[in-house]
Length: 397
Image 1 (cartoon, rainbow, N blue to C red):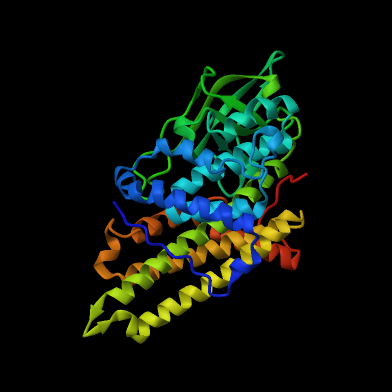
Image 2 (cartoon, rainbow, N blue to C red):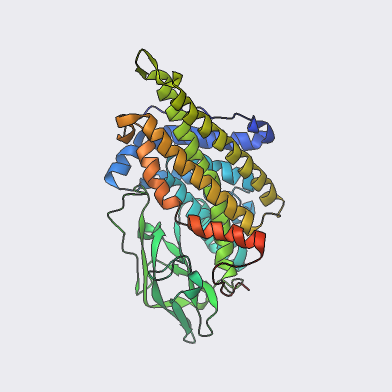
């Protein structure tokens, strides 16, 4: 089992900007990760298996819907706390953070924002405790970056809706109890439906042979004439804007989460460089290694300040989708690059499961793609600063 000796890098004393409650939430999550995740995660990554026994613990530390109000069974925390929880979970593993992100931002968030009171009371408390696990169906086989062209459809059959279509690359799908699914009605309007496991015609085949996110359960959602009760339609969701709002919440969590992976890589590389001796002295004494470490901590520090400011804006209700997009793109990229640099510093040892770097490196290949690819987020920022769209824009009303 791995010995987790992680020390939190804080070059600019960013901790001074956090409240005592924020630091308490972070420390509680960090200790849980050290105790429950680090010792077993390499084994589960090698097996390409999700450690389902961790679901109860994730619920207990408030990782499922941290921002959901207490009246609906949530912890009632703020967005800074949500970010810090995601940071610590992804330091442990991107797959574990993905599970919590989906449950929080892509399942609980849309029910909270767009659901009826009956839906909120029925689903949110059980999702918060992990009694129910959910997934989010937006991406389709032919439509990834262009969700507005989705082909999944449902028709009004009087007593129920009849849903047909398919979704893919769906985290949590193989064992999810419910799915928040986005599909078009007869008028072509995008709506949200809560589909429950056990509904006839609904299946969730698992996706195998992944080199990335091996501790996350990924699958498809297949809808073959699924009869969905009318009370399962999210009444407040109309148009593509609704699922995009869910993605904003998820991207916010990813911006914090990937920072955790970056910090873990830096901490691992620094410790190794001080301990590993070549040519009569530690490799940390050599200029090229110091250059790598200096660049790592610089990018981590900038990323820390970026998400701290974004968290403040989220709490104030001022954060824009473009600001969230910038943070997701920047922090995912710096983590992607830092992990590679750290892997090189460890030489051959960097590819072994004795260290977390190769696992982080493979995971980030997925994270840099999902919830909006690196290039799409670049175009989102470009559109925001120029006012000119470089890609076709669908209905966002």
